[in-house]
Image (cartoon, rainbow over all chains, first blue to last red; front, side):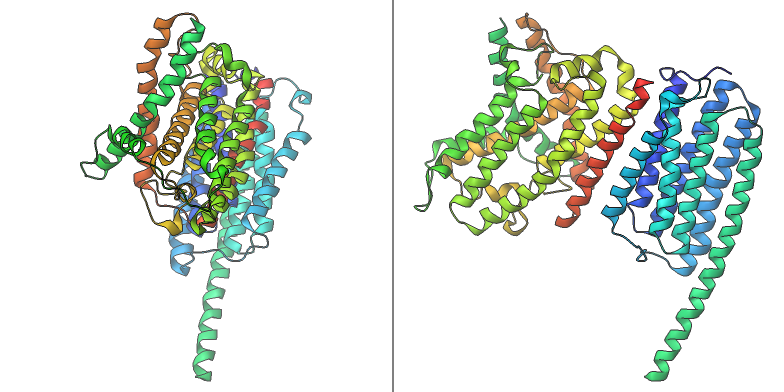
Length: 224
Length: 315
């Protein structure tokens, strides 16, 4: 399998999409509104699906086209829509206050993590014949940023978005390391299934939160 | 010939900076369904102010009196060292590279802050303190932005940067360059007090930043200060277009005709940049003061990610 030259059109598109994905992860980390988390995640997934389509076009791989379509449909459209309709609007979530550090601190840690990704994955030491060697560190940085988002946020929904970002990073790494693995298609769908399970957890936690709020209001009435 | 071009370049900056600002004010008025002042209004303002005498507080020292000249000279110096109408270095371009240019800009800002403090007017001190705070956050971002172009051209000379980008149009779509460009545009807005940071048309003393520093000035001193700030906007827009966005259409160092043709081309490029600034001016609101740090943090982060992704080029 020949690799994608950095200076070809496909290579440029791939690295630009990778940077857009990285920036979307940073945007998620630097935001405080639940609506924005979901919007940035949706944008990131659309870009990821575009990147997958670029690789699929270059290698004429049907499986990757399927993966691109699935990514667009499930992660780009379905998950953001469902989250917005069923969780954010129903529970009236607006501002995320459950953060363990300030925004600037988490952004600085994020910048350090992406620098660490470049130090850890020395692109010149990677084996030859990968799809796009230069994108691998970016995907690792996205994985780390997703993990950071999970660590910084305390709200379940925000943690879920962090987890989904990590998963996007894994998919990006997969398509840039080895484009022809049919396993990737399965893995992508599988991880999406796990995401669906986590969504259920969010619903449950949301309902619990609703009940808790109702109880406290009633208590206040009693005191009144 | 090169000397003539050198003089021409500085003349272009000095003479056309008011036109640029006037055109932007007019365009802004048209976008918000108003007629707006004439494009030449800044020239009338300058002529009026230069005819008037200056009222100087009896508490003011020589710092206050000398500051307008120093500030004007600083921007004049910058106009000598950056590519405005030629893509080849002119005789005086050896004076400083881009980081040196940033130092000269910082010197102008420092002088303005000193002059603002000199008369002990409360608004002057307020403006100086705010502008210095913003400047201290903008400077690291600016230097990192220069690094993003620097990794492409392996230099921090604006002419070599221009050549490196012009030589391979492919460089324009490299992530490093795109991120650096966006970050530099944000810094152009911040450094010139445009809308996400400050309302250039507003005259409420309590929210002033750039204007607050020159609030005490009047007459010809004020004219120089205004002119200098217009030159700053003109210069930074020209650097943005000539080094980052459209590095073509500049003349050589040895033909006057090339330099003369480059002037209308430059005006065309500035029209694009000005339109972009006008759109942002009319469609965004001013940020709360302490949110400016987040804007500058974003610019810093964009530039930093740009430098990090420069490994893409090496491979």
